[in-house]
Image 1 (cartoon, rainbow, N blue to C red):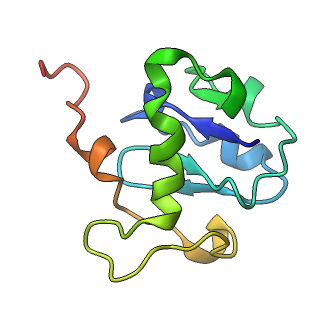
Image 2 (image 1 turned 60 degrees about the vertical axis):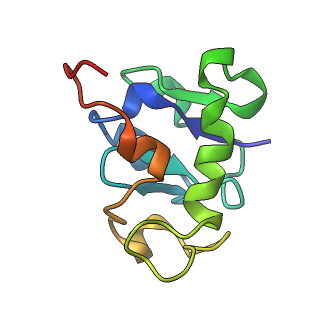
Length: 117
């Protein structure tokens, strides 16, 4: 069981969660942050500091955000647009990889804030 970040983070990316994560498992896409389930130690430090309440423990994800469980995992296990291979289950921490700069196809296709779908 791990934590994940849902769509309230899209186009916000406050990053407060990254400063409290003791294992550096929160990675930055283009429009959203992603928690690596293989690196997350389930400490929960990120959840209370999120100003948009976008962080959930996997077992408590609301039904309308169930898509985020598989989507979050695919950020690490799938090949992201413009990349040749997956980031991998343990890419070595977000400080080592830096900003990834792309999102999963699902997140990339979401309308921008204020945009009508």
